[in-house]
Length: 396
Image 1 (cartoon, rainbow, N blue to C red):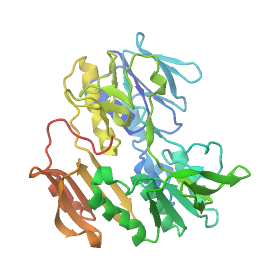
Image 2: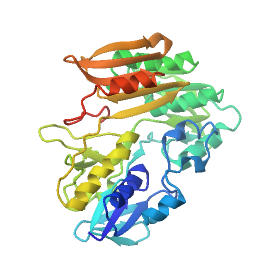
Image 3: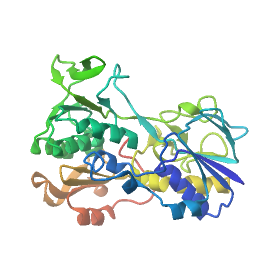
């Protein structure tokens, strides 16, 4: 193999480039990115960037010295639009083609948008650095009222940052309780209580009917029960869509992501996938699962690259899901996967004090760990989780 194209220039793409060089690949590497920025860290976008505590330079994932060592060509601001599997040719917006012997798909995902919000000023999603800078500029104009649609971790972090800025914030969640499928009902209620603890309104079990506004700018959020929430700024955090549209007609199987075997190999030889876009299918298990966590994007590409270079399955992706979230001065950490019926045992601390560590037990065995402001106990308890066998991600 003399040339590899990595499609996606975020954490998973950068990790793939590092892995290629670490495993001895000395051929040409071309990295294609839809954004104009070099790889940067996304978790601070909803926190330090919105609060003005982090500059663009603080987010960089690699420096000039490492870039020289990696010796890759970075083609940024030009998204991939098609893949020719026979020629291993990636066509970019503008017409350029990049031909190689292997392709790593690391195109991540893009935020879902509310119908009718296209082109309406004051309506934001938060996925990219440009998104964060645009939202920060809006939040700095006076004291806008903010409605966050979606009570996911990203929605909660945005609400936390807006609250820290002294803004009036309402979070709208369609489900009866945010994050219950991930954390289970009992622990989801503890996390949801952080909003009320900090003066943020949380409305659950209600759908958004649409946005209202005038002159091309949002003025409020209409709920399905008829209520109107005034809003100068609306932030939408209702999930993401994996970046697979450019693979249409390529023969690469997609189904809410790029479907891969446990080694991150796709249905087309010489094409692998990793990160948010990869949907792993374990034999005997259905459906396929995607994991949208930073830690997965930092680890899974190495498996994909090893198998790409070997031309066979020499490694499997056995990442145990792990994520963290900073909200209202509280560090939430979770590892493993919870399931209905798990016994949740508080190992130390008190959930009412928002400082505790808990283990999810299934059949007497630890399957997940959750902590608030208890990093050391969390690390200790996390070591109890099974490290082998097909993982069951916390998010699909």
